[in-house]
Image 1: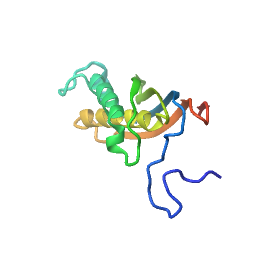
Image 2: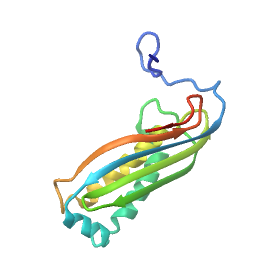
Image 3: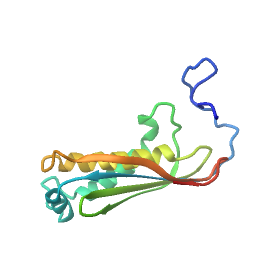
Image 4: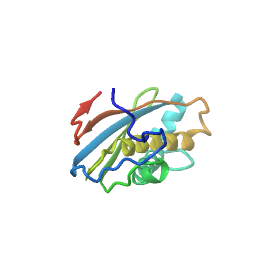
Length: 155
């Protein structure tokens, strides 16, 4: 079993030293879902929420969050992101958010993709909570990553 990389020999938290790693193209995709009532979905779909275009706000929030991941997650390396996309797909019971982040760097972008997806979902919740207090957010996870020493992985 691989040891936890963010702990030193004494168990103290540490930032992983990536200086010796080569820079490679890296990409990660994360997803999550928010379920909501049909009434709330209709308001989101028709862009008739009092707060404005809910999907546009959530998309921008997710992109901004990816860019600030190192400010939010302790020990996370700041990365020069080359691309962030946040896509949303609605169905009859909710909205699935899929966020993809890319960089050319020494460490992966899984945390950035997870942060983008999560903050987009939280923004959806915030903008719709006046209409539906029963919403749930779940299933947030990495579904694909590529690049780096460990190579490609897909859920």
